Image 1 (cartoon, rainbow, N blue to C red):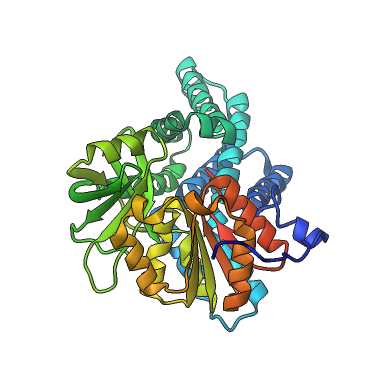
Image 2 (cartoon, rainbow, N blue to C red):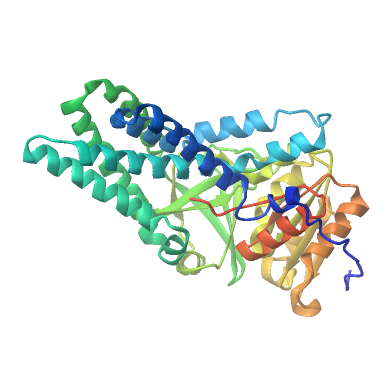
Length: 406
């Protein structure tokens, strides 16, 4: 395809459609829900601040636990495709669960402020209380979207070490004031520690078809499911990066597609380490929701093809691919491109070097209508993903993509 001769229908501007757009995303709705529930408790029983701190901290931690995430995706995607599309459309938004984390973390901080303002006792107790308060405020501030995006390494390290600090100090505070809360705190500690108990340094084989990308192969006894991701590190205490797993049917191990998108990835591609650190278990991501639909369109730009590839190879859900990238064979190598075309002979592969920048919304809409697809899943950068998802949903097509929540 060398041009986009598609006339998009006008976007629906009804209130129901507008409520699907930012800032009214399912993520933000869940934030609001948690806040409203806490406000309800505050009206009826605001004096039991410690209990509400513990409840919110527990929710904030557990909703980010890998086992819990996999359970949420399993429950959401267990719905049969015979259910009404509107129900499946909503279930597909399961990956917005981070709103529960954000809402609970904010509420825990506010409740702890109430606790700190009403705490009396020896100076040591007051110092411990206000130290926890200061760390919680720091975590919330550094997690603000703009600061997080600008200083991501600082955000990640502060969340890790600051979170551990809060757990330890709050456990000490609870032991002094109310030992009954040590049990839920123990559950949170176990939840946080569990992935680290599976920390290991594993061998990898790396091929770089171009200076832009590294195809990383793993075969250390783990064959993940399609739609999952693995976190990788070269220094496990400092930073972790999550990438979509690409298992191949009938073969052990898996691959990751890592493209140049910052200092860490650029150094990784240049150095090509022989071993990397991994932790935890393969964790479900947005791609898993393809199970909810009879037919889907995958839209990818650049290395976004990585998260799409395992689903295309598995073929569990009939699909068609729209892939926009710069000179795909030179960038990703003939082997990978031929592998993609082998399972997707009707794919729309748009070479931005020779064809210019495409109208991805039009391409996706056209593919959806031609293929009679029920939904579109977009794997791209933030602006493109938001544009594709919002424009398609305003035209009555369920659309999904990463939301870069905290």
